[in-house]
Image (cartoon, rainbow, N blue to C red; front, side, top):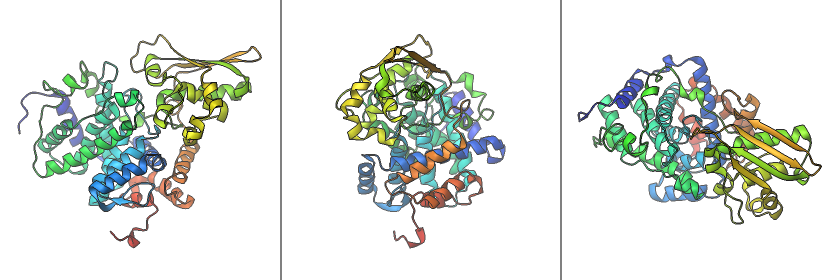
Length: 466
């Protein structure tokens, strides 16, 4: 079908997909992409043991049946769509996944489960293919996120991530321009994701990622069977910039496609909590180490944060918290740092969330809004602690740990991966996890990446009967 109107956004994206090859990627971008992919695998492994992850897997199994695609960190093989959905949920459910801060998009939560489901299904997809597709996908997702001029109403990780995953799959499947246009139309017709799930701390937040993975994979199959979608989905009267990001403007960012590789701009999460909380966690940890105090020495904690951070994390402490609520409750997280020294997956056990000493300490934490006018700003974040001896100590973070300008160390990345592998629903043996991590960091050398999905489950695929 011929598009009914001009669309600079669509045309720029189609040009970018067509022009981008592995050989065009700078070596530093390839290396950064491998770290991003390894980190996303780590999140999927850790997320496999989350309280509802098995329920999600069992539902996918009942709907889609057994198949040859592994669910990371488990002993289950499901159909490509079912496994993609399960992996997508697992990557995102712990709030541990990497994140493009300026675009406010966790695009890898959708992109990697989708492209790996494709690779596991069809085979003979190389590491270079995946690296190229992931970069295209992150560029498209970030373009949409950066185009926003207002605060998020729709859940950008799912919405922008789905369109980015569509671009990645178009490259892997070698779709022509008309077919890629139809693919975007079919994905757009299924876009969903509301911030209401975030506000209510519903597990539907992670499910919205799973839905996006499903919709992208389904749309690709439809396009390959000549099912048509709408074509003016970016600039049409009911297109993306007239419905999802009203008053959004992509024009300042279009020229960056193929010049700025957004994967290299992605931030990592050293802690399994909302990115909006990381400045507070890091600052408070440093204050405790520098000034040698503990939970029993604290009389008050004041957190001064931008409006976006307050909107996401300023929720009050309460008695019946669940994990999704606690992972973005700044007062609970601050109390947990004071008690435990940091934040880990174990921070969200029922025993901890119901612990009266912990919640009482959280009630000493006040979260205040600063005067930042940037609707998407994550920093600066300032922590002020009043101690029982009369001292007041303070720390402020502008560039949060894990950002490219304040990076995690190689050792921190490796520790996150190994700890995640060890905490999976089916824990990976240390030597197996080490092998997987090493191969992911040199992904461009892999001739068929489906072998890595198998390693992420511990399967000996030659012995598995489907």
